[in-house]
Length: 356
Ligand code: SAH
Ligand code: TYD
Image (cartoon, rainbow, N blue to C red; front, side, top):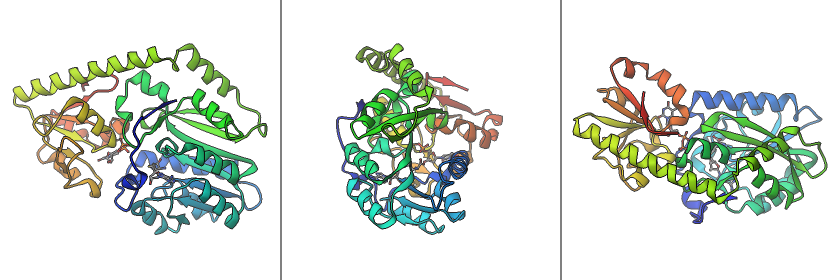
């Protein structure tokens, strides 16, 4: 298991001020609407089915399910986003999911046919309690489906900025299979996803209740063949990170010397890793623009680059934009086509430093 050594108290991260609203990306809205439709056509076709989502955020996935009148429950501790979900008619319980929560839900609503979670399970250090809760809440033939950034992609792309306070675990199929087995569960399917720089959607079921898809063994074998589990592989990753750091800092220093304006695009959690590792402050990046109102007017963690509203980007356009939200590159570059038409260039740093 690849994981952080330090743990931030959960209430300090997930509270009324939690600023990440999943519906902020049109591309991600489509991703989750597609999955909701898929669930409604497969796992949720029985008699009065019930789906629970852990970390439902602003309701980006449950919205379509709620509109179809299916029994559902979102578990979401962060008030900011839980309220946004509730306002749309989604049934939300404002709390952290853990074993005790699972048992309370089981008592009140009965077993769940689907328990789903996106970009949340990797945030939770008390993973044992989560899996015990899932084992308690899941119906005999139910599935627990979750998707999170994939260690294989992180190593392939040297996307070191996926390592930050909230991302406590970086899962692989091997680590998920081993983890599931300790709680009477089994990994029965894996699906590689292109979102957020590369993720895997894992399906767990009660051990022996479903036949695992061939993809499960294939991915584990592939991970074994490429030594994803060895320290040497991760040391190689570490040295590539330092090359990216050095290249990015030299590029920004050269641009500064040439009198070019550089701004950041997307005050992502990921960017805190990049800017703090590289020592990139407001001397090298004037400000970071971000469409999230809760982030605007504040400073980025550690290096204190001002965060400004999205419209600050074009008034006037900078010479270069450091794309911290590179996982949304396609959506952002399409939206900001005029920036390039005006002669602007994007700076990317994953998998290596380059301008486009
Ligand atoms: N599923 C959304 C949100 C991911 S952000 C998406 O993929 O876009 C992670 C979310 O998990 C946050 O909204 C946070 O408040 C929530 N969260 C963190 N710990 C949790 C826990 N123990 N139980 C339920 N939700 C949790
Ligand atoms: P996200 O992808 O969640 O990255 P992380 O998990 O590292 O925080 O965050 C994307 C950020 O980029 C979010 O703060 C919103 C912002 N953003 C824009 O400003 N404009 C856009 O067009 C998009 C898609 C995102």
